[in-house]
Length: 250
Length: 307
Length: 83
Image 1 (cartoon, rainbow over the protein chains, first blue to last red):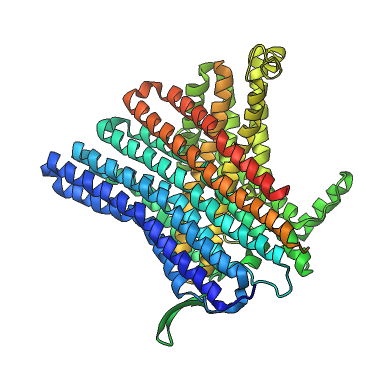
Image 2: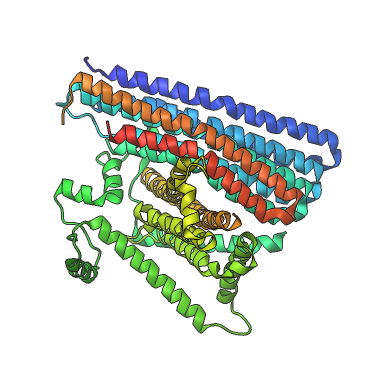
C-alpha cells in the first residue's frame, strides 16, 4: 500500500477526537456527582455553606485532572508535527494509540475522583468541624486514583515521542506486527486503568465518608485506605508492564 | 491541625530545595520544548530534533543491549576497582562476569547495604536515655511495626519483628536511593530480580512458619492430597501467584515512576515539574510500596499461623 | 528478521490479543479490590478494635480477587513471547 502524509494526519486527528471525546464523558459525570452532593449538603447544613462550597470546588478541580491530561494529549496530537512523512505506518499507529490510551485511561480515574469528592462533600456537611481533615483525605485519595491516569499519560507520551521512524526496506508483515503492537499497548493501558481508577475512587470515597462519621478513627481509616488503594492498583501496574513490553520488546 | 502539619511540610521543603540544588549542580536539563507560532500556526516542537527518547530509555533500562548495539565501551563511573573485584570473584563461580547491568545492580545493592550498616552503627552509637531526633524516628518505625506484628501474629510471635523491620527499611532505602541524581545511580528494586528474590524469600518464610506450626507432613498434604483439600491444585497456583503479585507490584511501581520521570524531564526544560514528580514517585510511592510489601508479607505469615 | 504477510498477521493478532487481554482483565479485579478496600475502611471505622482482623481479611480477599488479573498477565506474557 502506498503511504502518504495524509495517513499520519488522519490517525492524529482521529486520535485527538477519540481522546477528548471519551475522556470528557466521565469527567463531566464526576464533576456532576460532586456538585450534586455539595448542593444537597448545603441544603442539609446551611451554616457550613462556605466550607462545603470550597470542598466542592477543589474536588471538582482535582476530578478534572484526567480530563485535562486528555486535552493536553489531544492538543499535542493536533498541533504536533503530523505533517512529516518519514514516520511511516509506525507513526500513524502510534498517534492513534496515544489518543486511545489517554482517552480510555481518563475514564476510570475521573469517575473514581468524582465519587470520592462527592462523598467528601457529604461528609463535610455532616461534620463541618473536621472539614479540613476530610478535605486533605479527599485530595490524597484523588491523587491515588489519578496515579493510573498518570500511567496512561506517560504511555501516550512514549507513543508520541519515542517511536523510531519506519525503516526503508521492511516487509509488510513486519510493519503490521509493529503497528498492531503499538495500538495494543494503547488499548492495554487504556482499559487497564479503568477498573483500578474506579476502585480506588470508591475506597477514597468510603474513607472520606467514614471520616465524617467517626472522626476519632482518622489514622486507622487513612492507613487502611493507603493499603487498600495500593493493592488495588496492582492490575494497573500489570497493564503498564504489558504496555512497555509491547512498545519496547518488539 | 497546623501544628501537626508543619514538620511534614518542612521535610518536603527540604527535599525540594536539595533536589533543586542537585539538579542545578548536575546540569541535567538540556532538552527543550519550544512553544510558539510558526507561519501563523500554533506549534509545539523539540529544539533538538536529533534527540531520541527510545535510545535514551534503552541506555537507561537495558544497558547491555544498548552497548552491544552501539559497540561502545560501557562507563563504569570511577568504580574500576569494584568491577575488577567482581570479575575476580566470579572466577570461582561457573558463570563468567561480563554484563554491565548486573554490575550496576550489584554495586547499587552494595551501596544500599553500606548505607544500612552506617545507619545501624550511627544509631547504635547515639543511643541515650534522652533520645535524639534520629533515635526517636527509628524507635517510631520499630515500635509501630512491632505493634503491627503483635496485632497480626499474636503476642508470642514478636520474634518476627526484626525480619519485618529489615524488609521495610531495606525496600525503603532501595526506593529512595534513586532520587539522588548521580550518574549510574538507580533503584535496585527497578530490576525485576530484586523484588522477585524478596518475594521468594517471603514465601519461603511463610512455608517455614507453616511447617513449624503444623508439622511438615500435615502441611505438604494440603497441596498433594485431593481428599483432604479438594482445591489443592488451585492452591499451588495460588502460591505461585503470591510471588508474582507481591514482586510485580513493587517492580512495576518503581519502574513506572523511573520511566515517567525520564520522559517528563526530557520533554520539559524547566525544573519544577520533574522534581515534583520525583518527590511523588520517590517519597510517596516508594514509602507506600515498601509498607505494602511488608504488610503483605506479614499477612501471608499471619494466615498460616491463624490456621 | 523479515516476516511474510500471513505470519505477520498471525503475530499481530496475538499481540492485539495480549493487549486486550491485559486491559480487559485488569478491569474486574481493579473494581473488585477497590470495593473490598472501601468496605474494609467502613468496617474499621465502625469497629476499630478488630482492625488487624479486618486488615488481614481485606488483604487476603484482595489477593484472591487479584488472581484473575494475574491469569490475564500470564496469558498476555505467553501471547507476547511464545507466538
